[in-house]
Each structure stands twice: as C-alpha cells, then as structure tokens.
Image 1: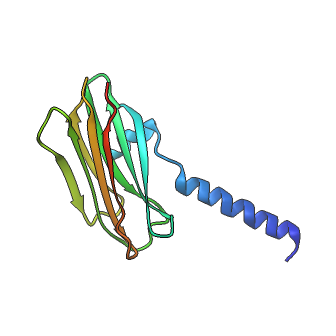
Image 2 (image 1 turned 45 degrees about the horizontal axis):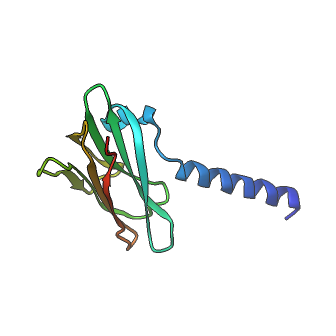
Length: 140
C-alpha cells in the first residue's frame, strides 16, 4: 500500500476511536430519560483497557435531582448484563436498574440538592465484567 492510503486508514481509525470514546453531553441527557447537565462520566474498561460502557451522572439544578445511566460503548463486544445505581448520602435507599439491555441501564434518580451522591455501575461483555464505584461525589 502506498503512504496516502495508509495515512487515510490511520485517520479513519483515529476518528472512529474518538467517536467511540467521546463521553455523553448534557444534550444527550434527555435521550436517556435524565434532565439537567452532565456532572461526570466514568469509563468501565475490559481487561485490555477497551471501553465496555460509560457511566454518566447528570444534575438538574431546577429540580435538585441527580440522574445516572450506564451506556454500552460501540466497542463492548458481546453484551451481557449491565447495571447502574445511585444513592444520596442522606438517603439509605439505593435506586438501581439492571438487565440484559442492548443500549443502556437506567435512568435512576435521587434527590441530591446539597448532598453527595454515590454512583455504581457494572457491565458484562466478552468475558469481562468491569464494575465501578464513584465514591461520594458531586457534593454541593
């Protein structure tokens, strides 16, 4: 192959990787059943450091609610079970959603005005099952 073809192929691969790993924007909150702006995102990787899912936390200052979703990435491979949960520091109840979903788990919501929240997620894909615990975050 000539250098021009190899260069074009490398550019296409890099662009594809960027698209696959770009986190959710605040505008996407509504597509997942959340409202408000994106507070934070975390990536759940498999054993080869390939993104399996992305855990997103949104906050709506108008309502005081936090909302979380766990979204499969395009590099997830064979998708299995996916889950997401959220809890505010002053609430003993954890809200969670899990299942063999094709696109995402959630949304799960908790009141979070002036409270820290904890978000956890799990995704089982292609013989890997990464999980994540945010610890207490978004303390306002």
